Every structure is written in structure tokens, then in C-alpha cells.
Image (cartoon, rainbow over all chains, first blue to last red; front, side):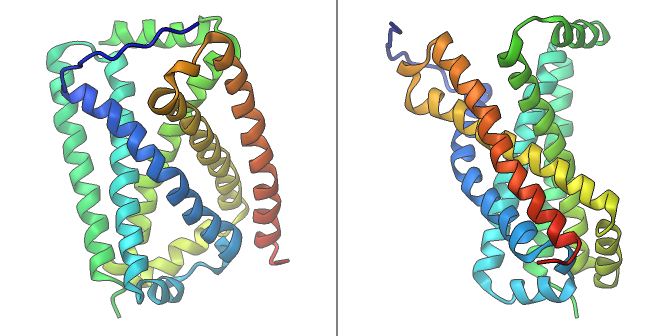
Length: 123
Length: 134
């Protein structure tokens, strides 16, 4: 029989990351699956083209959906990569360097993606 | 650092944890695979804004046998990562009381079965799409 007791855990960055992975998972499972089922099974990869993107992004809710997907999926991925890397990089300096590099990578691609979604298809 | 990587990777290969261990490994491999895909996906989709003329050319490159193969592999990675992620989240956040080594082993087996059962019809539909039969 498993015993259960509640303990207070100091909210360090790693604790927050642990929680974020699971909370974002709850959101991402339906969101990513709807996204992939829609684009690869309903629309089909052979029908994806610029006109389709333009038609989709003409609706604001599609843009909001894509922006949320980008924000949560990419953050979840970077946090997961951090978790894997930290199993190998155990030194304080190495971890600090990785944190900075991962933050920059996350920021760079997020900004590229968000500008793309907000800017829409250039005509 | 290098020693950690050598020790870590040899541990990942030699540890005899059976199906639960392969599930742990597959969760990491699929996560890294999906992140790699997602990074490229962000860049490719962004060309719709930054370089719209490039968009259809790049997409045409994906509508090839190699692109279809990548799509089929990615589908397994995404499905597995989602099903196993659900399993982990369910135990960790909602029912830590239900977690026992026995129930964990059961749920890990179920993860593989559910993932493959969801993947196979997806593969069939993707192949039919690529042949323009649907």
C-alpha cells in the first residue's frame, strides 16, 4: 500500500520546471493532436501550401491557436531538453551556461515564430 | 562533462530495466526528436511571412517518399510522447496514490499498445493521402 503525505517543497526553478512539464502536457496533448490530425490526416501533407496558410490565418482564432501552440510546445520542448542535458552536465558552471544558451535559443525561435504568426502571409 | 556523458550513455544502454526502461528512453528520444522537428517546423512555417515564395518550394520537398517517411516516424514519436506523457502526468499530478511498481509496469505496457494502435491507422491515412487516394 502506498503511503501519501503532503510536504512543502521550496519552489526552485527545477520544481517549477517539473510542474510546468506536467501542466503544459495536459494542454498540449489535445492541442498538438488536433493540430496534427487536422493537418496530416484531414487536410493531408500534399494539400498544404501558401494559399491554405493564408486562408487559415485570415481567421483570428486560428492565429491565436497557432501562437498558443508555439508558445507552449516550444517551451515544453526546451524545458525537456534542459532536463535531459542536466542529467549529463552536473557542474554549476555548465548548468548556468546551458541555462543561458537554452534561454537564447528559446527566445530566438519564439520571436521568429510569433512575428510570422502576427505578421501573417506577406502578399 | 565528457566522463558524465560516457557514464550516462553506457548506463542508459546497459541498465537492465526492461520495458519500463525502454519507455523512459523512448520518452526522451521522442521528445528530442519532436523538438528537433518543431524547431525546423517553426522556421519553415515562418517563411510564409518572411519569404512567401520559398514556402511552396520547401513544402514540395516534403511531399516526397523521404518526406512521407519522416512524417510516419514523426507520427509515432508524437503519439508515443503524448500517450506516455499522459501516463506520467496522470500518476504524478492526479493519482500518485495509485502508483505501485506493478501498476507502473502495467501502464507502461498499455502505453506501447495504445501508441501502436493509434499509429497504424494514422500511417494508413498518411500513405493514402500521399498517393492522393483520399
